Image (cartoon, rainbow, N blue to C red; front, side, top):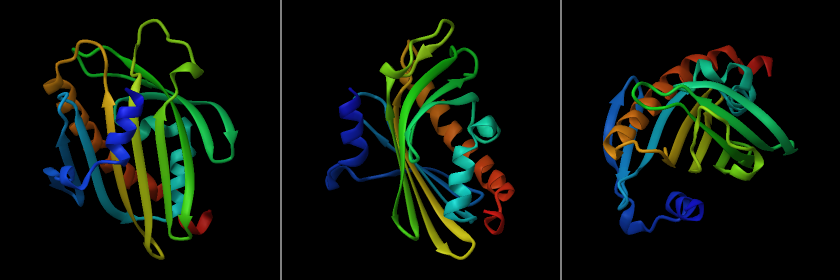
Length: 200
């Protein structure tokens, strides 16, 4: 399943690259692709003030991740195989009637050039045992592409596919996912201002 999600995220054939617009508001664009199994592939895009280093600082400031990642209670780095690789445990406070979720992911940050940074994320369930009181999100694949447009402006693109697990109807899980990605981008744009490029 994880392999399938990664293929859907990164190797989608050109014939399938048809995005349906979900929302455009406050400079944030959200799109979806409906997959045969009922899940959604989501994409969000915005242009905002900031720089690559500021975005990376925001991403690595896990103590404050709950201040911009929607419905996230906590984010903890379990270990870092290298400076750019991290095994991360995340707990989600899901809205009623959905039960709380958690997930373990492997992320890798890499610079494709001096003007672009990419982050790849995939499930790493074997790195941390399941915990009572949470339903584990076992199948997830996501990517970020951050591009420096000029000295103090970046574009941010996010794509993700995730199976929330449990008995959530697809319509409810998809609705929550779309709401979460817009909320996350909105708070991300505000939060980035706390990481001025001149201070990094």
